Image (tube, rainbow, N blue to C red; front, side, top):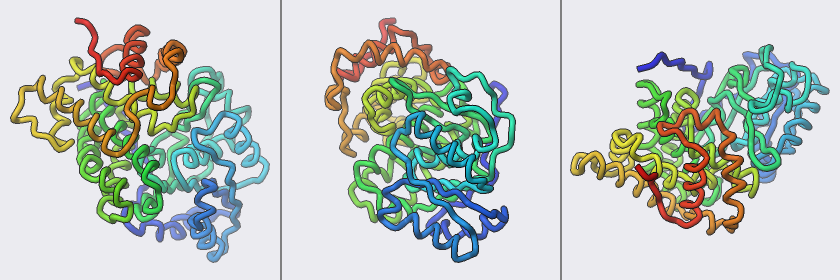
Amino acid sequence: MNVARIVFAPLSITGWGALQQLVPEVSKFSPKKILVVTDPALVKIGLAERVTESLRQNGFAVEVYTEVVPEPPLEIGEKLVQFARGNRFDLVIGLGGGSALDLAKLAAVMAVHEGSVADYLNLTGKKQITQKALPKILIPTTSGTGSEVTNIAVLSLETTKDVVTHDSLLADVAIVDPELTVSVPPRVTAATGIDALTHAVEAYVSVNANPATDALALQAVRLIARSLRTAVQEGSSRQARTDMSMGSYLAGLAFFNAGVAGVHALAYPLGGQFHLSHGESNAVLLPYVMGYIRHSCQKRLADLLDYLGGASHLLSEEEASYRCVEQLVSIVRDVGIPQTLADFQIPQSALESLTQDGIKQKRLLARSPMPLGEDDIRTIYRAAYNGKITEPNR
Protein backbone atom coordinates (compact mmCIF):
# COMPACT_ATOMS: atom_id res chain seq x y z
CA MET A 1 0.00 0.00 0.00
CA ASN A 2 1.02 3.64 -0.39
CA VAL A 3 2.11 5.74 2.58
CA ALA A 4 -1.04 6.93 4.35
CA ARG A 5 -1.56 10.10 6.36
CA ILE A 6 -4.24 9.41 8.98
CA VAL A 7 -5.66 12.32 10.99
CA PHE A 8 -8.38 12.32 13.64
CA ALA A 9 -9.90 15.25 15.49
CA PRO A 10 -8.30 15.56 18.97
CA LEU A 11 -11.34 14.43 20.96
CA SER A 12 -14.68 12.83 20.14
CA ILE A 13 -17.43 12.12 22.65
CA THR A 14 -20.09 9.80 21.27
CA GLY A 15 -23.24 8.06 22.44
CA TRP A 16 -26.77 8.71 23.66
CA GLY A 17 -26.64 11.63 26.09
CA ALA A 18 -23.15 12.78 25.05
CA LEU A 19 -24.34 16.39 25.07
CA GLN A 20 -24.11 16.29 28.87
CA GLN A 21 -20.34 16.58 28.44
CA LEU A 22 -20.56 19.97 26.74
CA VAL A 23 -20.15 22.20 29.81
CA PRO A 24 -17.17 20.24 31.21
CA GLU A 25 -15.45 20.43 27.82
CA VAL A 26 -16.19 24.14 27.40
CA SER A 27 -14.79 24.79 30.87
CA LYS A 28 -11.40 23.42 29.81
CA PHE A 29 -10.98 26.37 27.45
CA SER A 30 -11.99 29.03 30.05
CA PRO A 31 -13.69 31.17 27.40
CA LYS A 32 -14.84 34.69 28.15
CA LYS A 33 -17.19 34.91 25.16
CA ILE A 34 -18.64 32.04 23.10
CA LEU A 35 -20.07 32.18 19.59
CA VAL A 36 -22.75 29.55 18.89
CA VAL A 37 -23.47 29.07 15.18
CA THR A 38 -26.72 27.17 14.70
CA ASP A 39 -29.64 26.49 12.38
CA PRO A 40 -32.76 28.68 12.81
CA ALA A 41 -34.87 25.50 12.96
CA LEU A 42 -33.02 24.42 16.10
CA VAL A 43 -33.87 27.71 17.75
CA LYS A 44 -37.52 27.18 16.83
CA ILE A 45 -37.72 23.70 18.41
CA GLY A 46 -35.80 24.77 21.53
CA LEU A 47 -32.68 22.67 20.99
CA ALA A 48 -30.40 25.67 20.62
CA GLU A 49 -31.72 27.13 23.88
CA ARG A 50 -31.07 23.82 25.61
CA VAL A 51 -27.39 24.27 24.73
CA THR A 52 -27.05 27.99 25.34
CA GLU A 53 -28.92 28.01 28.65
CA SER A 54 -26.71 25.29 30.08
CA LEU A 55 -23.72 27.42 29.16
CA ARG A 56 -25.16 30.63 30.59
CA GLN A 57 -26.18 28.90 33.81
CA ASN A 58 -22.54 27.98 34.24
CA GLY A 59 -21.41 31.58 33.88
CA PHE A 60 -20.41 31.74 30.21
CA ALA A 61 -21.27 34.68 27.96
CA VAL A 62 -22.90 33.38 24.79
CA GLU A 63 -23.77 35.02 21.45
CA VAL A 64 -26.02 33.04 19.10
CA TYR A 65 -25.67 33.43 15.33
CA THR A 66 -28.50 31.96 13.24
CA GLU A 67 -27.96 33.27 9.70
CA VAL A 68 -27.38 29.74 8.49
CA VAL A 69 -28.96 28.33 5.33
CA PRO A 70 -28.62 24.95 3.61
CA GLU A 71 -25.77 24.77 1.14
CA PRO A 72 -24.51 28.19 2.36
CA PRO A 73 -23.33 30.56 -0.37
CA LEU A 74 -20.00 32.33 -0.12
CA GLU A 75 -21.74 35.57 0.88
CA ILE A 76 -23.16 33.93 4.02
CA GLY A 77 -19.68 32.77 4.99
CA GLU A 78 -18.22 36.24 4.43
CA LYS A 79 -20.91 37.85 6.58
CA LEU A 80 -20.36 35.43 9.46
CA VAL A 81 -16.60 35.97 9.35
CA GLN A 82 -17.03 39.72 9.62
CA PHE A 83 -19.33 39.19 12.61
CA ALA A 84 -16.82 36.87 14.28
CA ARG A 85 -13.93 39.28 13.71
CA GLY A 86 -15.86 42.19 15.14
CA ASN A 87 -16.88 40.54 18.42
CA ARG A 88 -13.67 39.05 19.86
CA PHE A 89 -14.90 35.54 20.58
CA ASP A 90 -12.52 33.01 22.07
CA LEU A 91 -14.53 29.80 21.51
CA VAL A 92 -16.86 28.74 18.69
CA ILE A 93 -19.57 26.08 18.98
CA GLY A 94 -21.26 24.70 15.88
CA LEU A 95 -24.68 23.12 16.46
CA GLY A 96 -26.73 21.68 13.62
CA GLY A 97 -26.34 20.03 10.25
CA GLY A 98 -23.35 20.23 7.98
CA SER A 99 -23.98 23.82 6.96
CA ALA A 100 -23.91 25.11 10.55
CA LEU A 101 -20.83 23.06 11.39
CA ASP A 102 -18.97 24.15 8.26
CA LEU A 103 -19.75 27.80 8.96
CA ALA A 104 -18.65 27.45 12.59
CA LYS A 105 -15.33 25.99 11.46
CA LEU A 106 -14.93 28.79 8.95
CA ALA A 107 -15.63 31.46 11.58
CA ALA A 108 -13.11 29.95 14.01
CA VAL A 109 -10.36 29.95 11.38
CA MET A 110 -11.06 33.18 9.55
CA ALA A 111 -11.48 35.18 12.77
CA VAL A 112 -7.69 35.03 13.15
CA HIS A 113 -6.83 35.55 9.47
CA GLU A 114 -6.89 38.57 7.19
CA GLY A 115 -8.66 38.85 3.87
CA SER A 116 -11.92 37.49 2.54
CA VAL A 117 -13.12 33.90 2.60
CA ALA A 118 -12.83 33.92 -1.20
CA ASP A 119 -9.07 34.43 -0.81
CA TYR A 120 -8.81 30.96 0.76
CA LEU A 121 -11.02 28.89 -1.57
CA ASN A 122 -9.43 25.71 -2.88
CA LEU A 123 -10.03 26.28 -6.60
CA THR A 124 -9.40 30.00 -6.92
CA GLY A 125 -7.97 31.40 -3.68
CA LYS A 126 -4.43 32.75 -3.41
CA LYS A 127 -3.98 32.92 0.37
CA GLN A 128 -2.92 30.13 2.73
CA ILE A 129 -4.14 29.41 6.25
CA THR A 130 -1.21 29.92 8.60
CA GLN A 131 -2.65 30.53 12.08
CA LYS A 132 -4.18 28.21 14.66
CA ALA A 133 -7.94 28.73 14.78
CA LEU A 134 -10.06 29.67 17.76
CA PRO A 135 -11.03 26.58 19.77
CA LYS A 136 -14.17 24.96 18.40
CA ILE A 137 -16.65 22.36 19.56
CA LEU A 138 -18.89 20.78 16.91
CA ILE A 139 -22.21 19.12 17.70
CA PRO A 140 -24.03 17.50 14.76
CA THR A 141 -27.81 17.19 14.90
CA THR A 142 -28.10 15.12 11.71
CA SER A 143 -26.47 11.83 10.75
CA GLY A 144 -24.85 12.48 7.44
CA THR A 145 -22.20 15.08 6.76
CA GLY A 146 -19.35 13.99 9.02
CA SER A 147 -18.39 17.66 9.23
CA GLU A 148 -17.61 17.30 12.93
CA VAL A 149 -14.50 15.25 12.10
CA THR A 150 -13.28 16.80 8.83
CA ASN A 151 -11.11 19.79 7.96
CA ILE A 152 -13.36 21.12 5.20
CA ALA A 153 -15.93 23.91 4.96
CA VAL A 154 -18.08 23.76 1.80
CA LEU A 155 -19.54 26.90 0.23
CA SER A 156 -21.86 27.35 -2.74
CA LEU A 157 -20.74 29.55 -5.61
CA GLU A 158 -22.83 30.79 -8.51
CA THR A 159 -23.07 27.44 -10.32
CA THR A 160 -20.97 25.01 -8.28
CA LYS A 161 -19.23 24.65 -4.92
CA ASP A 162 -15.77 25.13 -3.49
CA VAL A 163 -14.13 24.48 -0.14
CA VAL A 164 -11.79 25.97 2.40
CA THR A 165 -9.65 23.12 3.70
CA HIS A 166 -6.87 22.96 6.29
CA ASP A 167 -6.25 21.02 9.47
CA SER A 168 -6.96 24.21 11.42
CA LEU A 169 -10.62 23.56 10.61
CA LEU A 170 -10.62 20.35 12.65
CA ALA A 171 -12.77 20.40 15.77
CA ASP A 172 -11.04 20.48 19.10
CA VAL A 173 -13.99 18.50 20.44
CA ALA A 174 -16.72 16.66 18.53
CA ILE A 175 -19.83 15.70 20.49
CA VAL A 176 -21.91 13.12 18.63
CA ASP A 177 -25.20 12.50 20.45
CA PRO A 178 -27.80 10.44 18.54
CA GLU A 179 -30.54 11.76 20.83
CA LEU A 180 -30.23 15.11 19.05
CA THR A 181 -31.24 13.50 15.74
CA VAL A 182 -34.62 12.11 16.84
CA SER A 183 -36.51 15.22 15.69
CA VAL A 184 -35.01 15.18 12.18
CA PRO A 185 -37.86 14.72 9.64
CA PRO A 186 -37.92 11.67 7.33
CA ARG A 187 -36.82 13.44 4.15
CA VAL A 188 -33.78 14.99 5.83
CA THR A 189 -33.00 11.71 7.60
CA ALA A 190 -33.03 9.98 4.20
CA ALA A 191 -30.89 12.56 2.41
CA THR A 192 -28.29 12.89 5.14
CA GLY A 193 -28.21 9.13 5.61
CA ILE A 194 -27.44 8.51 1.94
CA ASP A 195 -24.81 11.24 2.19
CA ALA A 196 -23.12 9.27 4.97
CA LEU A 197 -23.42 6.03 2.99
CA THR A 198 -21.83 7.76 -0.01
CA HIS A 199 -18.93 8.92 2.18
CA ALA A 200 -18.28 5.35 3.27
CA VAL A 201 -18.64 3.78 -0.18
CA GLU A 202 -16.45 6.36 -1.89
CA ALA A 203 -13.82 6.13 0.85
CA TYR A 204 -13.70 2.35 0.44
CA VAL A 205 -13.12 2.50 -3.33
CA SER A 206 -10.87 5.59 -3.20
CA VAL A 207 -7.34 5.36 -4.57
CA ASN A 208 -6.26 6.67 -1.15
CA ALA A 209 -7.96 3.90 0.82
CA ASN A 210 -5.84 2.12 3.42
CA PRO A 211 -6.50 -0.55 6.08
CA ALA A 212 -7.54 2.04 8.68
CA THR A 213 -10.05 3.78 6.42
CA ASP A 214 -11.29 0.42 5.12
CA ALA A 215 -12.20 -0.66 8.65
CA LEU A 216 -14.02 2.60 9.31
CA ALA A 217 -15.83 2.59 5.96
CA LEU A 218 -16.99 -1.02 6.14
CA GLN A 219 -18.40 -0.66 9.64
CA ALA A 220 -20.10 2.57 8.59
CA VAL A 221 -21.73 0.81 5.62
CA ARG A 222 -22.89 -2.03 7.88
CA LEU A 223 -24.47 0.33 10.43
CA ILE A 224 -26.12 2.58 7.86
CA ALA A 225 -27.44 -0.21 5.64
CA ARG A 226 -29.13 -1.97 8.55
CA SER A 227 -30.66 1.14 10.11
CA LEU A 228 -31.38 3.86 7.54
CA ARG A 229 -34.75 2.55 6.40
CA THR A 230 -35.91 2.23 10.03
CA ALA A 231 -34.61 5.69 10.93
CA VAL A 232 -36.63 7.16 8.05
CA GLN A 233 -39.80 5.21 8.83
CA GLU A 234 -39.57 5.18 12.65
CA GLY A 235 -37.66 8.29 13.63
CA SER A 236 -38.01 7.63 17.35
CA SER A 237 -36.16 4.30 17.15
CA ARG A 238 -33.25 4.66 19.56
CA GLN A 239 -31.30 1.80 17.98
CA ALA A 240 -31.70 3.10 14.43
CA ARG A 241 -30.76 6.63 15.43
CA THR A 242 -27.72 5.37 17.36
CA ASP A 243 -26.59 3.22 14.43
CA MET A 244 -27.00 6.12 12.02
CA SER A 245 -25.19 8.55 14.27
CA MET A 246 -22.21 6.24 14.69
CA GLY A 247 -22.30 5.20 11.04
CA SER A 248 -22.16 8.83 9.95
CA TYR A 249 -19.31 9.53 12.37
CA LEU A 250 -17.25 6.56 11.15
CA ALA A 251 -17.95 7.42 7.52
CA GLY A 252 -16.73 10.95 8.22
CA LEU A 253 -13.47 9.63 9.61
CA ALA A 254 -13.12 7.30 6.63
CA PHE A 255 -13.65 9.87 3.91
CA PHE A 256 -11.66 12.57 5.68
CA ASN A 257 -8.63 10.32 5.45
CA ALA A 258 -9.29 8.45 2.18
CA GLY A 259 -11.31 11.07 0.33
CA VAL A 260 -14.47 11.04 -1.75
CA ALA A 261 -14.47 11.16 -5.52
CA GLY A 262 -16.77 11.07 -8.52
CA VAL A 263 -20.15 11.12 -6.77
CA HIS A 264 -19.25 14.24 -4.82
CA ALA A 265 -17.56 15.87 -7.81
CA LEU A 266 -20.73 15.55 -9.85
CA ALA A 267 -23.00 16.39 -6.91
CA TYR A 268 -21.43 19.81 -6.34
CA PRO A 269 -22.80 21.30 -9.60
CA LEU A 270 -26.28 19.96 -8.82
CA GLY A 271 -26.22 21.87 -5.55
CA GLY A 272 -24.71 24.96 -7.14
CA GLN A 273 -26.96 25.19 -10.19
CA PHE A 274 -30.24 23.78 -8.86
CA HIS A 275 -29.88 24.05 -5.07
CA LEU A 276 -30.49 20.38 -4.44
CA SER A 277 -29.45 19.44 -0.95
CA HIS A 278 -26.04 17.84 -0.75
CA GLY A 279 -27.53 14.56 0.43
CA GLU A 280 -30.08 14.37 -2.37
CA SER A 281 -27.42 15.32 -4.93
CA ASN A 282 -25.25 12.43 -3.76
CA ALA A 283 -28.21 10.05 -3.56
CA VAL A 284 -29.41 10.59 -7.11
CA LEU A 285 -25.88 10.08 -8.48
CA LEU A 286 -24.51 7.30 -6.27
CA PRO A 287 -25.76 4.24 -8.22
CA TYR A 288 -24.94 5.76 -11.61
CA VAL A 289 -21.37 6.70 -10.72
CA MET A 290 -20.70 3.36 -9.02
CA GLY A 291 -22.26 1.49 -11.93
CA TYR A 292 -20.13 3.40 -14.43
CA ILE A 293 -16.83 2.82 -12.62
CA ARG A 294 -17.76 -0.71 -11.51
CA HIS A 295 -15.10 -2.52 -13.54
CA SER A 296 -12.30 -0.39 -11.98
CA CYS A 297 -13.21 -1.42 -8.41
CA GLN A 298 -15.04 -4.69 -8.96
CA LYS A 299 -13.46 -6.52 -6.04
CA ARG A 300 -14.16 -3.66 -3.64
CA LEU A 301 -17.80 -3.42 -4.68
CA ALA A 302 -18.13 -7.17 -4.27
CA ASP A 303 -16.76 -6.79 -0.73
CA LEU A 304 -19.31 -4.07 0.02
CA LEU A 305 -22.22 -6.31 -0.90
CA ASP A 306 -21.84 -8.28 2.35
CA TYR A 307 -21.93 -5.07 4.41
CA LEU A 308 -24.99 -3.85 2.51
CA GLY A 309 -26.87 -6.96 3.54
CA GLY A 310 -26.14 -9.23 0.58
CA ALA A 311 -24.14 -12.45 0.28
CA SER A 312 -21.15 -12.19 -2.02
CA HIS A 313 -19.91 -15.73 -1.36
CA LEU A 314 -22.81 -17.11 -3.36
CA LEU A 315 -21.80 -15.13 -6.45
CA SER A 316 -18.85 -14.52 -8.71
CA GLU A 317 -16.91 -11.34 -8.05
CA GLU A 318 -18.44 -9.71 -11.13
CA GLU A 319 -21.97 -10.75 -10.18
CA ALA A 320 -21.46 -9.49 -6.62
CA SER A 321 -20.28 -6.11 -7.88
CA TYR A 322 -23.40 -5.79 -10.02
CA ARG A 323 -25.52 -6.80 -7.04
CA CYS A 324 -23.80 -4.14 -4.91
CA VAL A 325 -24.89 -1.43 -7.34
CA GLU A 326 -28.41 -2.86 -7.29
CA GLN A 327 -28.41 -2.68 -3.50
CA LEU A 328 -27.48 1.00 -3.67
CA VAL A 329 -30.40 1.58 -6.06
CA SER A 330 -32.73 -0.21 -3.64
CA ILE A 331 -31.66 1.80 -0.60
CA VAL A 332 -32.14 5.13 -2.38
CA ARG A 333 -35.55 3.99 -3.61
CA ASP A 334 -36.66 2.59 -0.26
CA VAL A 335 -35.98 5.83 1.63
CA GLY A 336 -38.05 7.81 -0.85
CA ILE A 337 -35.44 9.85 -2.69
CA PRO A 338 -36.16 10.47 -6.40
CA GLN A 339 -33.93 8.30 -8.57
CA THR A 340 -33.32 10.40 -11.66
CA LEU A 341 -32.33 13.96 -12.45
CA ALA A 342 -35.58 14.27 -14.40
CA ASP A 343 -37.49 13.40 -11.22
CA PHE A 344 -35.86 16.46 -9.63
CA GLN A 345 -37.13 18.60 -12.52
CA ILE A 346 -33.62 19.16 -13.85
CA PRO A 347 -33.89 19.82 -17.59
CA GLN A 348 -31.96 17.76 -20.10
CA SER A 349 -30.58 21.01 -21.47
CA ALA A 350 -28.60 21.47 -18.23
CA LEU A 351 -26.51 18.32 -18.65
CA GLU A 352 -23.78 20.13 -20.57
CA SER A 353 -23.36 22.93 -18.02
CA LEU A 354 -23.32 20.32 -15.25
CA THR A 355 -20.58 18.47 -17.13
CA GLN A 356 -18.48 21.60 -17.52
CA ASP A 357 -18.74 22.39 -13.80
CA GLY A 358 -18.17 18.78 -12.80
CA ILE A 359 -14.88 18.46 -14.66
CA LYS A 360 -13.50 21.37 -12.63
CA GLN A 361 -13.59 19.35 -9.41
CA LYS A 362 -10.04 18.03 -9.86
CA ARG A 363 -9.42 17.62 -6.12
CA LEU A 364 -12.28 15.10 -5.89
CA LEU A 365 -11.90 13.41 -9.27
CA ALA A 366 -8.26 12.58 -8.52
CA ARG A 367 -9.39 9.97 -5.98
CA SER A 368 -11.59 7.98 -8.35
CA PRO A 369 -10.36 4.43 -9.07
CA MET A 370 -11.32 5.12 -12.68
CA PRO A 371 -10.11 8.38 -14.23
CA LEU A 372 -13.18 10.37 -15.23
CA GLY A 373 -12.83 12.69 -18.20
CA GLU A 374 -15.32 15.09 -19.70
CA ASP A 375 -17.02 12.44 -21.87
CA ASP A 376 -17.33 10.10 -18.89
CA ILE A 377 -18.93 12.78 -16.76
CA ARG A 378 -21.33 13.70 -19.53
CA THR A 379 -22.33 10.04 -19.91
CA ILE A 380 -22.94 9.66 -16.16
CA TYR A 381 -25.15 12.75 -16.01
CA ARG A 382 -27.08 11.46 -19.03
CA ALA A 383 -27.52 8.07 -17.35
CA ALA A 384 -28.75 9.74 -14.16
CA TYR A 385 -31.20 11.80 -16.21
CA ASN A 386 -32.57 8.78 -18.09
CA GLY A 387 -32.52 6.45 -15.08
CA LYS A 388 -30.39 3.82 -16.79
CA ILE A 389 -27.07 2.70 -15.31
CA THR A 390 -24.41 2.81 -18.02
CA GLU A 391 -20.90 1.42 -18.31
CA PRO A 392 -18.12 2.73 -20.55
CA ASN A 393 -17.30 0.99 -23.80
CA ARG A 394 -14.19 -1.12 -23.28
